[in-house]
Image 1 (cartoon, rainbow, N blue to C red):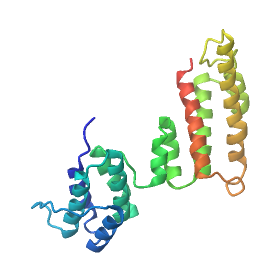
Image 2: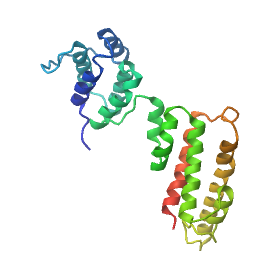
Image 3: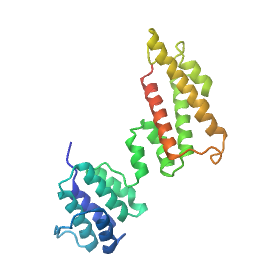
Image 4: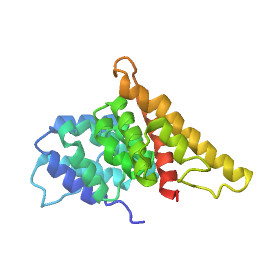
Length: 237
């Protein structure tokens, strides 16, 4: 694994934010996060005082003898304080290209840390970013229902679909359904899937979001659950 390129981060973030912050704001943010003095790293290619200041603070951080996790947490706090909301995606892209996998929005950090199934990222990330947790969960449940229908080539829907296709006599199998353990796993997946339809998809389809709120923590847990089911579907034959 390559080491994070803090110099690249320092140059590119400094250039990106040089018109969006001030010397005073940069120093205030740095002094509130870091417990070490700034060093100077002259760079003739940098012509902005603000870009140079960001460059100096980030390279000073890079030199600190602390573990990489703590270093990246400090970097995230510093950048979050000086980055306007509309530039967060660009800064996060710079970090990613430089080998630092952190997100300035803590909620997004939680989302990405769950290692969700790719379909959860595709259909739910935008809604989650908008803090629309109710509809993020609804979309995930709908996606699972749709993918099961397509793989099973079934005309059934929801609860009836899951009880039929995931049964030991159904068309989707994650075990041979021969031993008692095989049957328990297969039946368990059937009831988990059917329960998702009854407890989550149906209420989100028929109840107003204001009457059936879903918190961020519940959203993350439910997306993890649906992600697990999608991975089982990927393995099913």
